[in-house]
Image 1: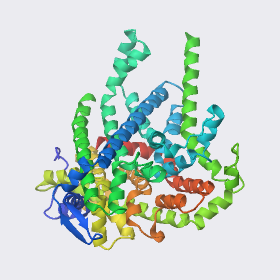
Image 2: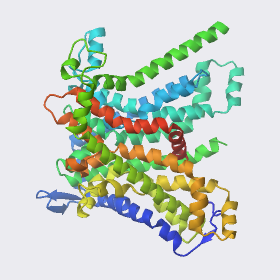
Image 3: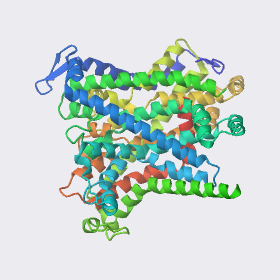
Image 4: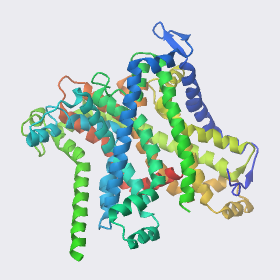
Amino acid sequence: METETHAAYKSRFLPWLLLLPTFVILLVFLYYPTFETFRLSFYRVAFLGLRKVYVGLDNYREIFTNPEYLRIFWNTAVYSFLVVFFSMAVGLFLSVLANQKVRGWRFYRLMLIWPYALSPAVAGVIFLFLFNPQAGIVNYFLDVLFGLRPDWLTQPGLAMFVLVAAAVWKNVGYNVVFYLAALQNLPGDVLEAALIDGATPWQRFWKVTFPLLSPMTFFLFVMNTIYAFFDTFPFVDLLTKGGPNGATNILIYNIYRDGFEFFKTGLAAAQSVVLFVGVVLLTLLQFRLGERRVHYGG
Amino acid sequence: MKRRKLLSTIAVHTMLLLSVAVVAAPVVFAFIFSTQTPAEIFRYPPKFTFGSAFVENYRVVWNQYHLGLYMKNSLFISIAVTVGKTIVSFLAALALVYFRFPLKSWVFTFILLTLMMPTEIMIVALFELVTDLGWVNSYAALIVPFLASATGTFLFRQQFLQIPESLVDAARIDGAGPLRFAWSILLPMSMNVVAAMAVIQFVYMWNQYLWPLVVIREGERQVIQVGLRMLTSGQDATNWGLVMAGAIVALLPALLVFLLLQEQFSRGFALAEEK
């Protein structure tokens, strides 16, 4: 947009023709359903889905006052925070390790990031088995070491732990890729100056390296949050189904349930709108910080 | 001093190897247990070596649980979307970069805004739309909505802007029209972006779960990821050997693409960040 330098061709129809497929798809399959989601959120389905009744803001009132829905928001916040925090913290830790000038860092990098290529569904069924109370290998080790055989998926805290572990395991690689690239592009002179100042490695990391990584940290924060909001659906669906007793029911899973199991289309749409507002805020944040990153890069 | 350095090097390697082992452990265990019979899996202590049902488990999930068919379906939609999206995005970027036309900044914003609209958010409305179109249970529902994207368009746009403008001027002076220029100069010069995008799109489509779960209601057309779900819920007493065999089968193609095309993968990541 800012550069018209390459725009050598002029034609009245051709550019529109080239853009037509993109226009049609985006309009029909993204803009229209988004608009429809807003519209549906003001309706309630009656008579087995045969009729829609306009109910104004009733759906919103319901999701913002009913304790069951408030709990879903709370679960989503807790789950997202844990997934984002641990994905990024472990990712950063592993990148710093792999960035020590050790031989074979490329090999280590590859061996640390490959689970990123797996699907959440694959990760989900594998964790379902690992944490199975009877046949699972986790309980075997816990039994041998501490004499414990917890029933992972029937206790709220433990079920949440398994969901977080699976999501983090699958996504750490993504953070390693980006943090490692950022670490390798850090300006060497700044790090050297800190070295000469006699700062300890610990101080050097928190006072110099970590602030320099902050643009990347912001970018990864946004990407990991979006991952926690949406891509984690298979984990919940395969591992806990939102249970026990709604303890791990998060927004994206409940939208599916309300929309396709209970046929409460209006409520599902209203929850989608809430999630949509979250994504818009995150995206705006990313655009703002993204611009700043360019300046950081000098 | 030298001794300390050696010690710290050993410590770093140890921690890295430990991390590598932890990262790999779930899949390694999944593979080992995918070869065992239910009796072997429920043995105490567990058997940490290959079991006696290697061929049997994989044969059963492939045929009786139709993972072979689902793999074929997943492969088909992933390739269709990858190819389609590459073409559609390439053409859109061509218009955005190499043409002067009115309202261009509006077009740009129109595409940009869709970055904020993940399919998952509109799943209820999208399902109603697809139902109205009569696409429930069809590949069209799994393919068409994904054929255009802001990400793809901007990846190509970014690449085109890095190609010296003198090239397009030269082409124009030589009398090459825009399509000829696109085909014989732009496309060959953008192959790295094509490859990077293809890898990322393929894995993205291969891993789709929620939308196929909603829109495909009969077995025939199901994709592999949802097939795994059926494997865990389809039996009374879960035969974990079969489930793990299914997981290994389902992860192989995406992992293979990733390992063979790591370069493109990393480049795609880097590009996606710039967009």
